Length: 64
Image (tube, rainbow, N blue to C red):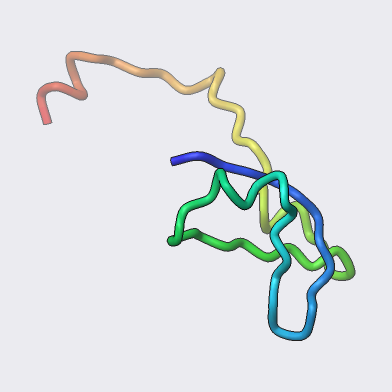
């Protein structure tokens, strides 16, 4: 799967794909819409969890 990112303006209910991407994109795509007016980065990229204090014991994990 390839990923392309670009900004565009909606044309009614249509999303215009820039010419530079048209021959790189197949017929099936996944579309994620980010509305710049109501952008909430915590919803898109949840805060990271500090895992440095976590203890991991491989033997306990394999015993399960």
